[in-house]
Image (cartoon, rainbow, N blue to C red; front, side):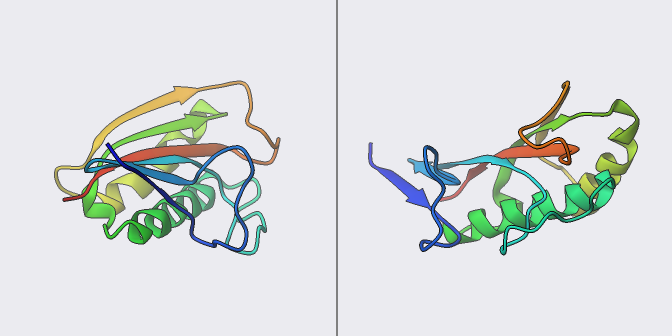
Length: 127
């Protein structure tokens, strides 16, 4: 099976991992945090704004692979504060109002940067 790697910015590739990898019809999207295309933090202290940016980043990667958010079949979110869950759930519901993807949420002690409140990874199925 062939493997295709996707980067939203081929001139700014992360080291040690790929933002998106296609294997067959599945595209595995690495956990996305609330950094914009320029690498600036979006929504410091605001989980709802951070979740929106995470999903924008996911959408950018899935578009690189020829898909859209409609092709997302599974999402996993990692959250620092359980009290932020309702804000995240609203963002997810707005993006996937009907028949959304399978979803899991895991509450953790922290992420790679203490300012990140959420990280979201996804899997898309693209024909």
